[in-house]
Amino acid sequence: MPPSPRALLTSARSTGRLWRSFPPAPASATRHRVAYVGWSGNGNLGDDAMIAAHRRLLPRWDVVQVPNHGGIAPLSAAALRRVSVICLGGGTLVLNGHFRETLERLMRAAPDAPRVMLGVGVEDLEFREGRRAGVAGEVAAWRPLLTEFDMVRVRGPLSQATVASMGLESLVVGDPAIALPDQSAGQPADRPAGRVRVGVNFGVTDDLWGGDHAAFRASVVTAIGRLTAAGHEVALLATTVQDRAHLSEVARECAAAGVTVSGPNAVGLAELDTALKRCSVVVGEKLHALVLGARLGIPTLALEYRPKCRDFQLSVGRGDWVLRTSELTADTLVDFVTAGLAAADADRPALRRSVEDLGLRLERAAEAMRLAMARVA
Image 1 (cartoon, rainbow, N blue to C red):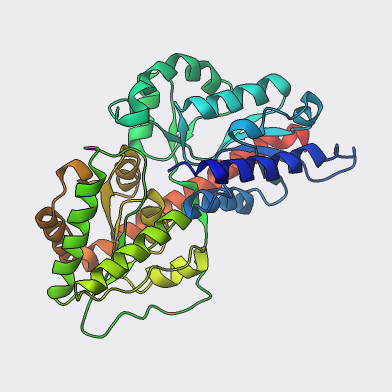
Image 2 (tube, rainbow, N blue to C red):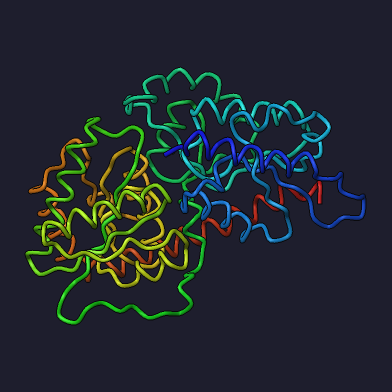
């Protein structure tokens, strides 16, 4: 979800200062600045993982976060003209009005800068909950912008279908965070003997199918109690600072009811990877609980609060393992997890093959980006 107003202000100020103080590159410089349009630095591990993946795949380039919201407004035209490349980053950015405005300003300021993308998500035109009720109104404004890119590369099949409805071609390459290696310092999986550990991620969101946050939370907490009563370990997995606070409250609520859970983990990639590797399956609401778990070969069960979760699951061949939040009850969730656990061992080889395929697609996409960017290198 978008960060709090305070986090936005802090991020805008710090990123804005970085951009204003960034000197023009000397003619002999071997590194050039890539203006990354997207989120990062706001306590969301998924956002930080995506920009880290861009930096890993573009090692000779300085991939710099563009200020968001009010942060870009005070930047001078001279500062913006020092952009070498404009990169539409990771996340569900296409058909989002805010990111369109940021992208448009960069394009006006640096008309000759190559426009590239690695693997972006696209808002779903069928999802009209809350603030996304007007997404369809963005189609006409986004279409000409996308035609300026070297190629439209997207996260998954749903994103591709939406782009096709706009009359444009695209290539599915997966979520950029797939490209990140295991950060758990080689720590082995430590699953409890004789029991399976279910990783459960859910937290603070803005819009979700059905719109009933309280009912969703209550159903998940009840299901956790039933899973532990059935003899399973449950680990609470956090991917954002807000979610860690939320899951800490859930852990206290479970303890008061006599239900033992572990976690939540600290919000860092190494800490999350360590927690993930101890799980037999990952039950995730947040997109990057799914992405980061899948990249380690852990079968993912998506709690689809927005279509982006299904988009990713389809990209790794797990489109059947999606439960929409508007259809979720404690009973349906327990049945969903039980079936996922039963299928997990058989599902792992296919998941690993899908992840390896997407990793290769991302590598090829990065190579194509480097070629498109070569004229300024």
